Length: 340
Image 1 (spheres, helix red, strand yellow):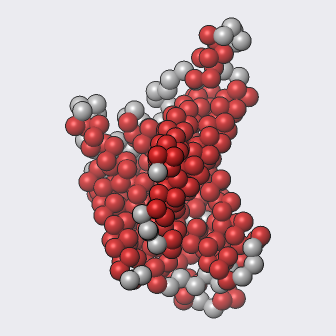
Image 2: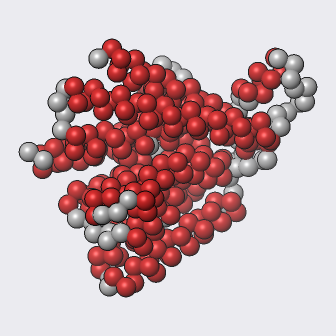
Image 3: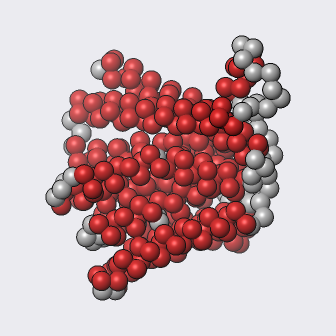
C-alpha cells in the first residue's frame, strides 16, 4: 500500500511541477512573438495539452478491432469535453475561492468576455451538432457533419487570431533560461526559441508521464479497496487524461492570470469537440445512448450556464464554476446507481 501511495504522490508532484514549467514556457513563447492571451490560452496551451490524450481514442479506433474497442474510443472522445466542462471548471472555481480567502485576489473571475463567449459559443454549437444531428438525420449525412466540425474549428482558429485580445500582461523569466544563465551557458537578453520549445515539450512529456503514474497507482489502490473495475474506468480514469488542462488552469488561476486559465479549458473544449469527434463520427457507429448521451447533455448544460452568466454579467462567478463539480457528482451517482 505504501508503494502505491508513494507513486500516487510522485505522479501528482510531477504533474504540478510540469504544469508550472509548461505554463511558464507557453507564456514566454507568447511574449516572445507578441501573441495575445486568447491565442496563447485557447490555441497553444489548449491544443498542446489536448493532443496527447487525443491519441487514446485514435489508437482504440484504428489499431484495435471489435465493438468494444470502438466503444472505448467513443467513451474517450466524449469524456474529454465532459471532464473539462465539469471538473476543470470546478477546480478553477475552487482555486479562486481559496485564493480569495487568502486575500490574494478578487472574488470574480476576470476574463475577456468576448474571447470566452466566443470559445463557449463555438463549443455549444459544435457539440450540439455532433450530439443531436446524427440522431436526427440519415446516417449517410454524418460525413458532412464531420466536415462541418473540422471546418468549424478552422474558422474558430481564424476568429481567435483575428479578434482583438490583450497581450501577455505578466510572466516570469523562463525557468530553463534562468538556469542556463546561472550556469554561464547563455549571455543573451532573451531565451532562444529552441530553448522555449524544449521547455514546453519537455514539461508536456513529464506531465503525461505523471498523469499515467497517477492513474496507475490510483487503479492499484482502487483494486485493493475492491472498487468495480468498470466504475474505475468510467469515473476515475478519465480524470487523469484531463489532468494537464486542469493543473495548467489551476496554476494560472492561482497567479491571477484568469484569461489564460479559462482560455486553456474552453479552447481545449472546442478542440476536443471538433477533430476527435469527427473521427468518432466517421469511423464508429456513434450511437449516443444512456450514460454517453447523459454525459454530453451535462457538458452542454455546464457550458451553457457559464455562457449565460458571462453574457448577462460580463464576468464569471466562481460559484458558477463550482456548480460543474455538482454536475459531475450527479453523473457519478447515476452511473453507480445504474451499475447496482
